[in-house]
Amino acid sequence: MWRLIAGLLLIAPSAHAARPFVTDDARVVDEGGCQIETFVKSQRRYDGTEIWFVPACNPWGAELTAGHIKVDSHQDGNSSTVLLQVKTLLKPLVTNGYGIAFSVGTFAGHSNSPYVNGIGSFSFADDRVVIHANLGAIHDNEKNSVRRTWGIGTEVQLAAPRWYGIAETYGMRGENPTFHTGLRIWLVPGSLQLDTTVGTQQHSPERRFATMGLRLLW
Image 1 (cartoon, helix red, strand yellow):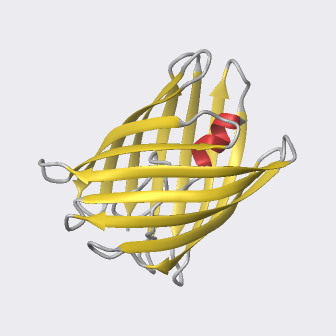
Image 2 (cartoon, one colour):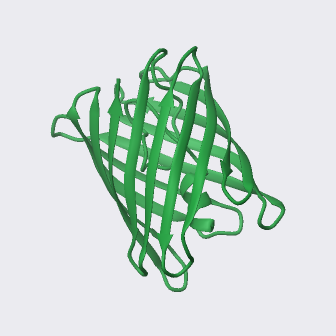
């Protein structure tokens, strides 16, 4: 259960911070538009795979997400979770400025785990570097406690056209931080994006994972 919450506690959108990037950004899908984010996450130290399918639409200015995450693990057993979220902009992100957003949602499986997340994004060098900071909380129903969540991430436009480098660290109270890096490329600018990442969390034994994902916008 901890892998699912830690991987989902912060969510995503627009031209940059999309899944499998965990730290969220102060953007939403364009009003009247939709997207589908889907990826596979494979654990390195044991036989385990997560499959994410997360559609989102913006019908009237707020982004609505309803997704499904399936976890297949020989070590911890299989599970299935529904993700429901609403995200709204308090201040749109502008070039060489900042943006603020807020999200609220829940993970619904064998028990519900509601969460809130505050999001700040900061643009530098004409959007070639964007930094995101998240601070929130999730109610851990398994332990009947509220756990603080956080994340810091950056996205850097690379020299090659349509390529971005991404790096982040995130976590929650009671867990060691996770470090996550990768590459992103627009296969069709503004419409189809490919992501590949690797991540690690200090633990005994150390936990390692890799992801491959696609993002479709219309």
